[in-house]
Image 1 (cartoon, each protein chain N blue to C red):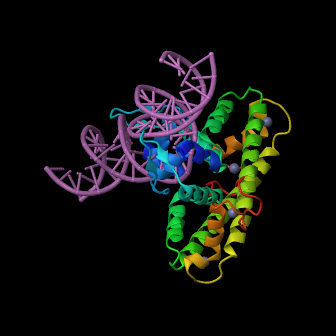
Image 2 (cartoon, rainbow over the protein chains, first blue to last red; image 1 turned 90 degrees about the vertical axis):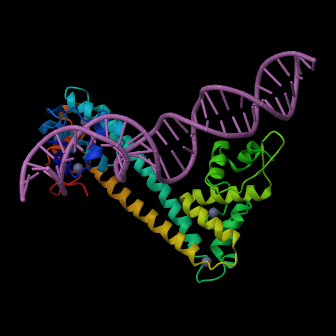
Image 3 (tube, helix red, strand yellow; image 1 turned 30 degrees about the horizontal axis):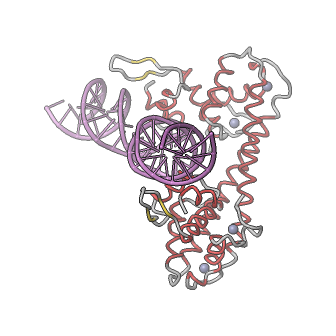
Length: 146
Length: 146
DNA sequence: CTTGACCCTGTAGCAACTACAGGGTTTGTA
DNA sequence: TACAAACCCTGTAGTTGCTACAGGGTCAAG
Ligand SMILES: [Zn+2]
Ligand SMILES: [Zn+2]
Ligand SMILES: [Zn+2]
Ligand SMILES: [Zn+2]
C-alpha cells in the first residue's frame, strides 16, 4: 500500500507519516520503481501503535522507547512502567496547574459584571494593580506569580 | 535601568525581554551611547503586566490586545471580558482532555503489577492490541482514538 | 493527450521561548 | 594601567509535533 492509503487507514496525515519516518519511529518502507513508499502490515501496526500512544499524550521520545520494547519482547518491562508513571505524573501536574489557573481566572472574571470603560473595568484594574506589584484578586499574596 | 536589572526585577529572562520587544509587546526602550537599552518604570510595569497575564496562561496575542485596553482606558471593556471568557473556556477544555487522558493512563497502568518480560507485560499487550485495531483497556470501544 | 489525483524532496511556519556565536562595553580590582 | 568578569548587542538556530507550501515527477481515466 502507498502512503495515502496508509494515512487514510490510520486517520493520520500523509505529511505526518513522513515526519514519523524522518524521526525514526516508523521502519523505513520499501520503494517502488517511481520512488513511491510501499508499506506492509507491519508499518500499519507501527503507525497505529504510535497514534495510540500519541492519543495518550506521550511525547515521541517515549513512544520511540516503547517501540523498542515492542521489538524486544524479552526485555524487562520495568522501563515500560516507568514511562507510564512519568506520563501519569506529567498529566497530573498539568491538571494541577490548570486547576489553579482556572480558579484565578474565575476570580478575575467576577470583577467585571457589565460593559464600562476599560479604565473602570474591575478586570483591567486588577491587571494594572498586578503590573505595579500590588496584590490582585487572582494573586492575593505579595506578588511574584509562582 | 538596563535590561539585566529589568529582567532581575521581574524574574524574567533577558532574552525573553528582547523577545517581547520584537513581538511588539514592550514599548521600544531608549538607548544609551553604547546602544544599551534603557528602561523606565513604564516598561517595568508593562513587563509585569505581561508576565502576570502569561501566568494566567494567556497567549501573547491576547496579551497584546489587553495591553491596548491598558493604553486606551476609555474603550468599552467588553473585549476584555471576551478575552477572559475565551481563556476560561480554553483552560476548561484542556482540563477535560487531561482528565480523560488520566483515566485512560490509570486503567492501562493497572495492567502491569510486577517486573516481567515486555512480551508478557499487560501494558505492552494492550498497546500491541491497539496497534492491531483491537480494543484496549484505555479505549474499549471499536478503535479510533477520539 | 490532457486533467486530476497522487507521490516526491526540501523548506518554512506555528508558540513562546532558549541557547548560542561572535562581537563590543563597563566595572572592579590587582 | 591592564586585565578579567560581567554585562550588553545582533542575528541565527533549536525546541515539539506537526502543517503547509513550492516546485517538481507519476499514473490512470476519459
Ligand atoms: Zn469589564
Ligand atoms: Zn493576579
Ligand atoms: Zn509491565
Ligand atoms: Zn487504548
